[in-house]
Length: 572
Image 1 (cartoon, rainbow, N blue to C red):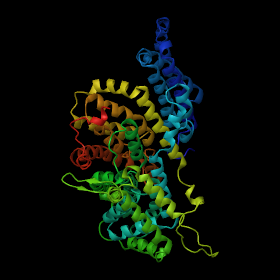
Image 2 (tube, rainbow, N blue to C red):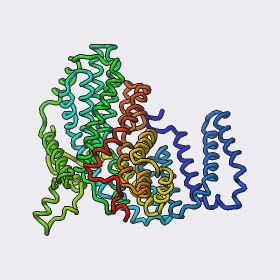
Image 3 (cartoon, rainbow, N blue to C red):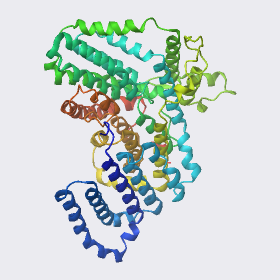
Image 4 (spheres, one colour):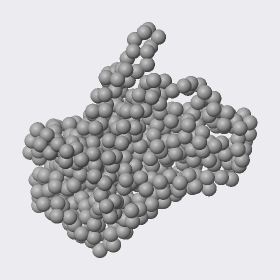
């Protein structure tokens, strides 16, 4: 049986077929739109009826499904051929590549990292980008920012520091069931700002299950609503917390690089500026999610302090013992890295500006140092390399390894880095081929009359519910260039659509397959699908309103964005 979040073999076959047919259909659009091909139009209704008949009246075995899908792909190719044939050749080739990549990304027809390597072959072959222009996207500074952050996170996990931080945060909030849920959510959200939400959820799950089991021994059936509230709180807060930092969730990284690709003259959003602008959104969204869970499951959660829960947390902390030397050194590296990230760039608070350390050093050493040469990736890789030099604890064999070794470092998700590279190459192809401009002009004609706030709401709704069934990173990388072009075609600030869309891509809470944290807590067997859907659909809608509203009122102002006008750098 396929694991949660993985398609079954038939789904892979369908995805493979749809991708190939879509790729060929887009490329052959001028041929299918030729006058002599109009005679084929009478076959379209027959093929459509035939595909439906196969799906309805035949048993849904592999062959009938694939034949039906093939017929539907042919119907779509014939019907869309006139519109596709009007595209410029390079734009059409880029669209064909995007259809192939999106189909295989969504259905995991082949491994996602393998699909991400397609631009290295397709773009040079079709003349969209040169091999060099394509390959450079797989080694951008944004990718090294994520790599450095992951090495630091692996170091924190290697020495158990993340577990100690989480347990102490939970202990601070007490053992009243409602407050315990909040404590787990705060701990999870904080850790997921710096560590992947998958690793955070995997670390928090056994602690939560131990608490649930202990409380059940004491309170029995009274605790039947506590488990889903606690576990869903962990899943949801892992996604919410990751919004606060550029490295917290992959779509954030994708956004920063795609902005650089599409708008080279745009001011860079530093780690500190992002954190300052998005943290208020997290601080509002997290309590709302907690209140929602308590309201939905509150009738099944007992009130009052529970000594069993307090005992479990105390035992877990006691089992950790005193903080080791390696933990202390890793904690110092973590704190210093966070401070260097947050304070590197100037922080514009509207009425006044706090200079960053990079600009201060440039002022002291103008002839030897340039703040513009630095990036948050410089800090990430510098501190990551430091973990290979600083010694950890002495082992039983007498050896004293460094805080990080290569055997641990190679566990970082190389596939995600390839996914980033493929998405960045696709974004550049959208820009250079004119496909983003083509789509944007069409989309702008349809939504041009909408007020900006409603346009943001519509964008957030699209990304939130679309990423319930698709990869949030892949979806973000496909749609952001289109949204950027739409904004410029409408004469509004590009980030008006791009940034809320990016944040919404990480806020799919309804289905187990939507995010790794959702799948992890669902696999515990303590959460029923109906509970996740019931809580998730409400939180999806709440998230759309929170993101749209706070982006307009708070985040945009803290980033210094004037949403009413299009900046000069967006027109160049």
